[in-house]
Image (cartoon, rainbow, N blue to C red; front, top):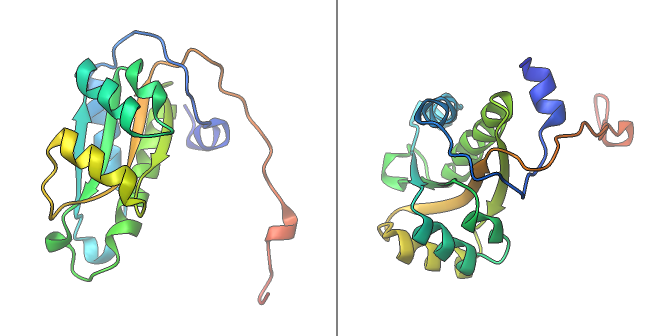
Length: 169
């Protein structure tokens, strides 16, 4: 799929078929994530890939907007090790770039995704940390629920010229 088509037709998908995501597709998506830019190219990201149904059901119960995780075949939790970053405060940007690459790469493979935010809402972060045994020193940005879509992708024109400012505000 053309990258522009993937960008323009990417949507949050919340209904998934039971078909598993192949190991190759998962590797492709994670490879794309690791191609994201990061401050000083330090790449502080880490990814917890959750395929276990019991774990996905726990995530669905703990995160108020991730109910679909119980039925989707994969959840990817995007984390960062602040010790691997050159400067404090950039891990959020680094991991957000990686997470966006996951969304676009998945769309290019005709996989559906939905980004469920966590950081900085610690009431969302800490329960997931506990279930997945993420060490306390590791930051958790958010999670991506992923699978084969059971709903259509649709292009929506979100271009708004009022949001563009030329040369100054």
